[in-house]
Image 1 (tube, rainbow, N blue to C red):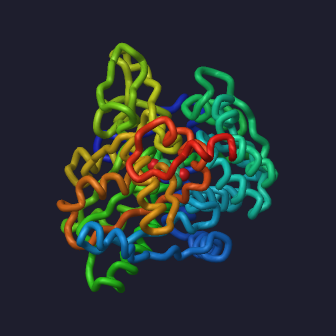
Image 2 (image 1 turned 120 degrees about the horizontal axis):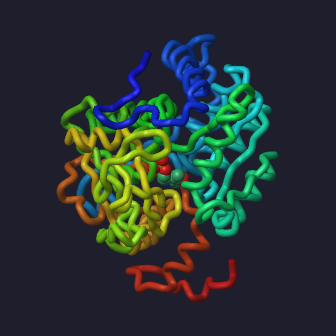
Amino acid sequence: MSQSKFGRYGGQYVPEALMPAIEELEDAYQRYILENEDGFMDDFRTRLRDFGGRPTPLQHAEALSARYDREVYLKREDLLHGGAHKLNNALGQALLAKYMGKERIIAETGAGQHGTATAMACAHLGLDCEIYMGERDINRQRPNVFRMRLNGAAVNPVTTGRGTLKEAISETMRDWATSVEDTHYVIGSVVGPHPFPRMVRDFQAVISEEARGQVIEKTGGLPDSVLACAGGGSNTMGAFHQFVGEEGVELYAVEAGGSSLEVDEDGGVAPNSASLSTGSEGVLHGARTKLLQDSDGQIMESHSVSSGLDYAGVGPELAYLVDEGRVTPVNVDDDGALESFHRLSQLEGIIPALETAHAFAFLEEEYETLGEVVIVNVSGRGDKDLESVIEETAERDIENAPEMDVFRGGL
Ligand SMILES: *Cc1c(COP(=O)(O)O)cnc(C)c1O
């Protein structure tokens, strides 16, 4: 059986009612994923190719390479079906549920990206799908709600607490505890109780499996550094996994520094989502990890201009690799991310997700220290962010941004 912990992080801090579900999933993870029973992993890879559009390219970024005087390569997960790396995991878990004989899928979603990927995977596989989404998020992310419904999913509003991602996860776990017989919970990142962090990482590892071969083919060797933005940490772990054992490759997890790194522990609100850089050890959603909590251990509200990074915790494996000194946690603020959003759009003709823009902001700030060959994981495309980028840019003084006022009200 695979280990439930990464050093002192991870584990299975769940109510007793959930243990049967967790144990059944551990067994399925072992058999289908680790041992490829019934050819599960072959089926998964074929579907990722034909339905998902894998492999995604590793593109040499000419303008960025010239700007920074080194070779910058982009792993184009934005070109995966659905426009982000999320499908790797959603398709993997939905398929696993099918092999386990479950007919119903439940999932949480924050901004709606994971819910959208899960709804797509369920339609593809003929599974029933219910998505829990905070009421506030439903109002902020209408287009993704429509996408989920178009794919046949039911979207259940969550009205507890602030009505955002944290409450949606808790609500989905509650459903699962009473429905495990016919239901699988497709969690959206490398978080939650074991075996989720390992399993989601294994599904996302296809990113670095491909990138490793691609970069060797293009440059004759391994990269000097790999950059990925980190919310829960699934695109990060996916982009890092095949390089963790290579000591010469520096790994940078770029967190959302939000509007400030100063955290008022008694205020209940963190102005950032940088749990690796500013958080402390605690338990959230079934795992021990680094998180943003107040002096009483209550989870704080987090903040980021990008909703996909706006989470108070982070995957336990990433917390472990940071403690071990293998992964370097860094962060950039909201303004830096917005500037990079515009810069990448103009220089490379790629509109990145606001989450991804954080990785490019770090590249802009620190390129001199990153070596000759740099891979940036382009976790997703920015179409979903147009409305908020126009709002946020118009309110600030963002370098090189086009005149945003003219777009206001037009979208
Ligand atoms: C959801 C999302 C993220 C953050 O999630 P991780 O689990 O940290 O990868 C980053 N980028 C994009 C495009 C996303 O949709």
